[in-house]
Length: 110
Image (cartoon, rainbow, N blue to C red; front, side):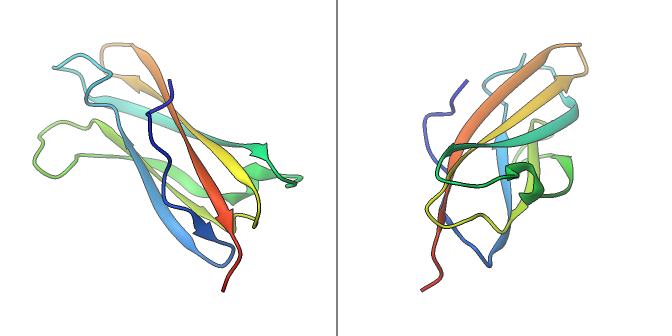
């Protein structure tokens, strides 16, 4: 499911940690146990979008929470004039599997 907003654009030489919180998409008592991110191309030219996923995804407890409801992934080197679909697929301790996706645009370095 699309989260309803795009993430901040990234310049080609930037490396940032992006996150998605599933608190509204999983049961109120559930916590995340696993997360996998994928990166695909929506527009532009990039022969290997998945190479921009750096390291494994992590599961985190958002500030002000006591449950692991969010996942983070470092993404680096997005190409200018490309728009990517970032998708996180998570599993909960109750056995549910849920996906969220958003978009990230690659920008030229000024």
